[in-house]
Length: 228
Image 1: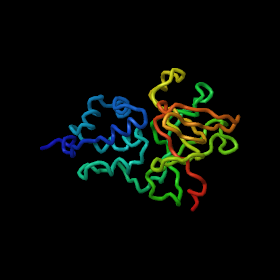
Image 2: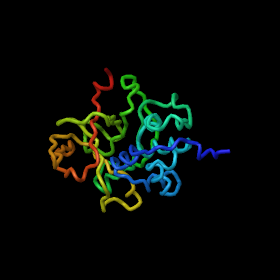
Image 3: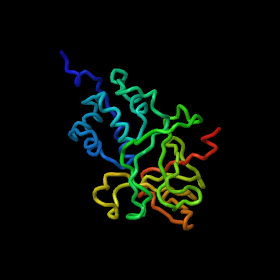
Image 4: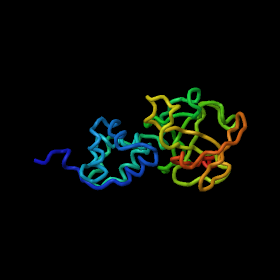
């Protein structure tokens, strides 16, 4: 009799490696999140080990994707959902740690999905995420605790509000948080091949950040996007 954990279809998962790189994370970090040895994740990426049904939800959390986004990338024989996703809201809320007072970043992403919010106008969208504003750097546009919905599928343009995932680590970040993703929420004034010019609203000031320090830049949805 074939063991259950050997029965799942094995296929290479380069998309997992690409998503980890996009978030500034590593296969070893995913392994720690799953509670398995690091080689097991490298084996999944290389196609020598299939993803187990009880790992799908946790992989989705760590990759900051809805469960459906992970499931659709798996081979058909492995698409066993761990629970009924039809009852889950449409937009995942990403877990955050407040760090503004310590480091100057708006927050850190914990890698967890802490809930879901519904928006009828965005039903069926798998590329939308939700963060909560931390601090008052973007008053009066957003106050602390207000939701910020952003999309990962359409690149931002100049003058859009954006969510910025910063790359790598920073010595100002406490050691216990260095495996998490640093986040800024700002207005994008201009983008070049080497720099992003950003605006903070409170107090109003313009800064530039090197593109090498940026992992990803996502467009914040407007209220019009959410109600039409």
